[in-house]
Amino acid sequence: MTPFPKAAKRTVVGLVVVAAALTVFGTAPTAAAGRGRAAAPAVRTGSAEALSEPAPPINRLRALFGSENRTMPTQRRVVAVTFNAAWDVEGVDTTLDVLRRYHVPATFFLTGDFADRHPAAARAIAAAGYGIGNHSYSHPHFETLRPGERAAEVLRADHAIRTATGTTPLPFFRFPYGDTTPQEIGEVNALGFADIEWTTDTKGYRGPRGGMSVRKVVQRALDALRPGEIIQMHVGSDGQSTVLDADALPQVVEAIRAHGYDIVDLRGILDPTQNTAAHGPLANATYNLAACSVTAPRR
Image 1: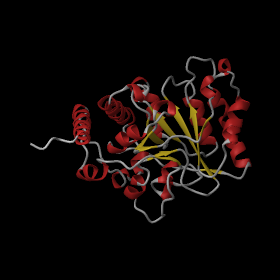
Image 2 (image 1 turned 90 degrees about the vertical axis):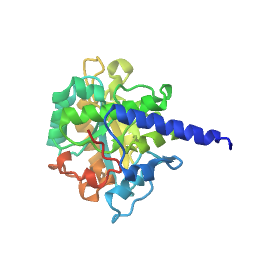
Image 3 (image 1 turned 180 degrees about the horizontal axis):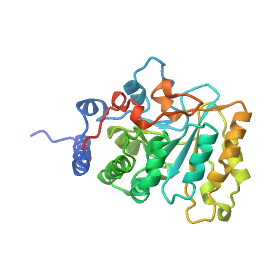
Image 4 (image 1 turned 45 degrees about the horizontal axis):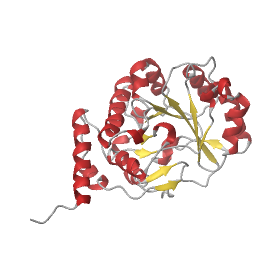
């Protein structure tokens, strides 16, 4: 009998593990996913490749696969503002109010644990029309988990976010701590998500105890200013008395615009019609994710 190659054994084991995780959480990849995602391309560090405007959303999503995407694929003077939500809700109301008053689009990356513990806040974010991404369920260090456990983190979070918000999340995943490996990105791609990281983290979550201030938050956003910058901020206080990112947000917005940059919707990566500097009624329910998702999780 011809011996089974070790590499093939590893591939089969990996597929079985992911399939088991999908079964546990009641989701399954479509036929297209099986064809297009079994083997993710080698990871490219940096920004995604430039995407042609006429490309349909599904191709624009696939073009992000295999990449640690830390900038938007554009040469325009535009910036995307994003927020992670994993701890408490102390800065949610202030953040939403500032975004509304300044007409700023934004994308929020929620952990499933946050969605389960704070469903009202998750619903408020979605109801305001902002994009919702996946930030894992419990915010673990992914390198300490087995492939099946990593898949479970992603899919459990997806289920929790859908339940809490009543909307379809974006096919965007942001790794906890921003730590990625080619293997882990490939696993996430196989589940139907593009890895969307950040160009700079304002570090406001560290708070005054961590040596941060409003001025430093604003400066960190400006230090990385470039076409396609993706700014990462946080809506929680992590037990501190103030949420610096929420407090600094008006100055961050004003400073970015004063430097001749517009703030655009990160959803424009998939659909150019969403890539607008003016926030409007862009609720996920009106965003045609069915057209751009390679895997459509079913329950």
